[in-house]
View 1 (tube, rainbow, N blue to C red):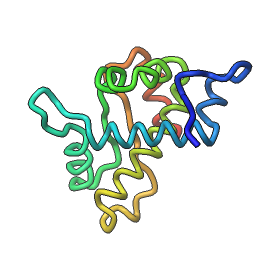
View 2: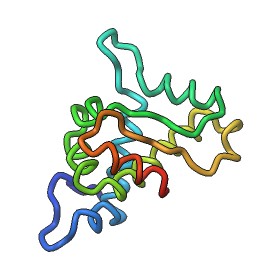
View 3: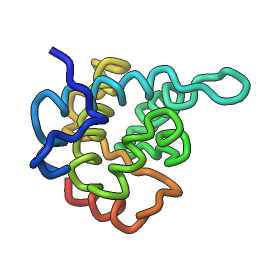
Length: 133
């Protein structure tokens, strides 16, 4: 069953909606797709390469451009500003799933992948949320 995450159910707070199973699965599905398929002006993969470099360097932080994210998934851009903790938690989970799929043998010992948004309208909130996860 799919859910239209662009339509917040009446009477439900944004953090509660983001935390619901159906919405969270859709958020993670969309963000995984974004990380695997987003390309630059020269049609080169951006985040697929960044994930590989991050793993090769044995790091746990992946910086995602707010502009890239909000252009590809406008609702995510809004939610990073309005509800940074729950959306970043879901995005971190999705990023970790991408990391495990890309490098299953080398990253099994890693327990998390922190995803921070650069140039976001609430840069402080994003950084705080990423540390809390």
